Length: 195
Image (cartoon, rainbow, N blue to C red):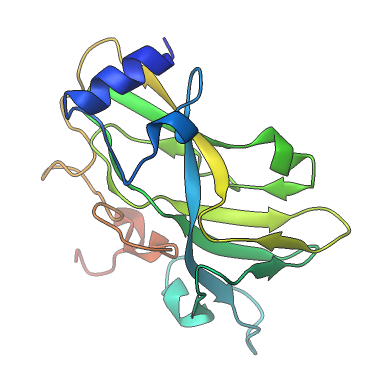
């Protein structure tokens, strides 16, 4: 069951759901919360390497940080992919799961908000990293603080036993701040020598 605006406000008021900073009258929609674009971007550099190997490569080495002022804009060109982040700090309780989706007004300009990572686990705390793609034919100007995506929240059948961040589960992105590149090289199946 997706939370309504009334339920979202109650969860926030009770401190069960954290979305900070927030302007409730602007950001809380009938069944979602609009999230704003942050001002940090991770741009992929062109490398003299034929491929990325998720088993061995730390993806951080292929990116460079770009921090723009709130008054400036980032131009996302056609066929470009960039990581960015939301402005808000999010904390999802253990009885909710969240999904981010693009806003239809931006989708109609050919802006995609995530490649595959639209699912936010119960227990997640941090800034959500966005995987922005321009699949259109015209460059798109992205402004810090613009409403970039929406967060929908659903109740679980019961609180989960091992939420994201639990000591017994892998939680590579817990407490992330800013745009965070892939940490797939840390996955258990890629670890060497039992590390």
